[in-house]
Image (cartoon, rainbow, N blue to C red; front, side, top):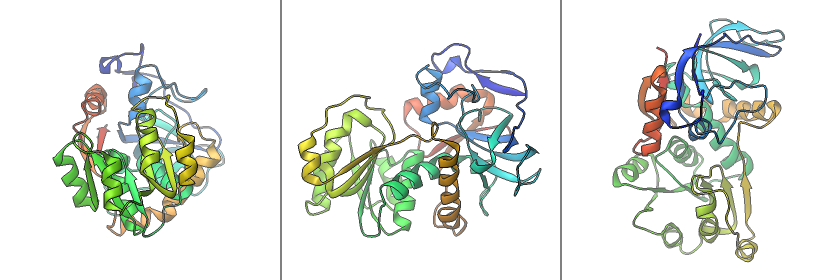
Length: 326
């Protein structure tokens, strides 16, 4: 098969489409013929040499895919060769074939085409696990998501609205904020021109946000705490704004707040399977009912993954960037 390899870390040009050995499914795994994958920020870090795949996993980038089951490994039940699926991966999605633990498979939702389904696994699992399973966002609460026009952001807006939360977003252009509003965002903050702490407090009569989903990390740490409501929960899922920052513990204590930080890739198989099962139970009906939809910015050939990385690095996109073998 062919896959995107990274012979040496570097810029987008470091991604090389080349022939590699076919993967073979082991116990509890399936082989998926990949129709599409999607570009995630973690892929950019891996390309640069900063986010190595866990030992024993595929060396190729790609944390999600959609395709058809080509073979079943020993001990797999509930799935058949030919089933159309999408999947959460530890890596290997930028390829023609990938091996996936059966617990990380999802059926393609009714009403979603197979190529587009690759836009779903990473964002739905990230948002559902952090915002609902960990931070326990409830109806009537105020939810702030940074980067509202990103793949994560566009899904977070829709899921939070679906459960009855008031949604605030940050984004850097009017076009992006207008799109967030179309998805249901109530409070729109242009982070280039406005202070999100002041805007959130103003829009909530000084209360603040009950849950914040943050992709910035160190840069926003103390400002996020300032923006929290009493008993607020800050969920950190990225570090685009740096990895080290000072925390004002007195401010956090004053809010009786909580900070969590997670990634999906390194979690044990059982934890990832539990997240996937929860997404299938709670999110898939919302997608199939037309209440939530994947937002796709562009589709590019898998062999041109370098251009997909450039699109993300330029940050002009809205939603997901897909890579296709179709």
